Picture 1 (cartoon, rainbow, N blue to C red):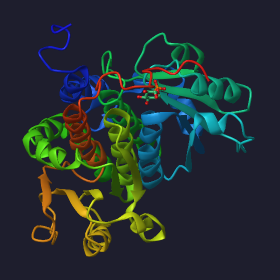
Picture 2 (cartoon, rainbow, N blue to C red; picture 1 turned 45 degrees about the vertical axis):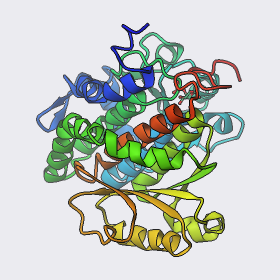
Picture 3 (cartoon, rainbow, N blue to C red; picture 1 turned 30 degrees about the vertical axis):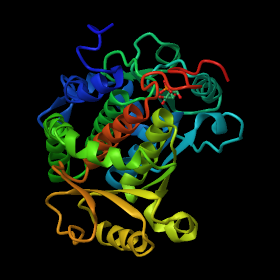
Length: 369
Ligand code: G6P
């Protein structure tokens, strides 16, 4: 067993460290200079994508968060209206499906019962086509979808998903770029996005080097019973994912919130025993997020903030726990900011002595309803 963990204490830690290579493998042979290979999907995909007028994404757990991030990208870059929904909700309602809507499931295992049920419903519901993003070739999802784009994360053993999410995001970024190409989005924009994707493995590597600073955060948070994760825009799903990861493996109650919604409830929970972890990228929402952070600070909340080292933020003297990160640009930024949150949960869980790779009550693949 020690061998397969490659000397890491847990599979999860190994898988976190495999992310640079997993992303490199996922984009290899698919991203050429600024173009996305046509065989990136299947033979008919170009035609289907050209006709696509809406996208419905359906998934569970961490894969759902990948869908949420992708929605920001797809709408902002390609202007294709996109909805994202939890599979167990989607399958039991009566969704409206406008003409030329593409159905897309995202799943690491390709065996999640609710996602499969949603796909089976979708196949009879009049969608343009059913696509899947999946990590397991020949899984049920791969076999039953019209087209399946494989993430090349390699086997993921830890129950808490890490490299699978990162490669799902890489695939969704490629799909966004492909759609941008088919819709003639400005070449300058596409070149910039492609460049960010190419530099992503190196930037993830740099985030992994923050490990010791993140451990310092973990040593504080381990003593708490609750935690709040904040983000805005495309980083809001990253806050949700940070909270999910922490609760899954450390059993600390955690919630992810869009920071602008703080004053509509969670601010009531903030006191000097409430760690508030904020993801602060260098984007147009930075100033707004800073004022949300100030709201927490004024109420004595314990702040742990991740910022882009390039940003002109005024947080340095105001926040006790701050990590400055190398970021890759606004497109791939959510992928990069997710990495330190994975390490944070990992270290908190290790300090609490939980079973990191197999947390209680959870399964890697939920094949029953
Ligand atoms: C379980 C796993 C999660 C995963 C979710 C969806 O809850 O513990 O890590 O995100 O299922 O699984 P899928 O294989 O469909 O991505």
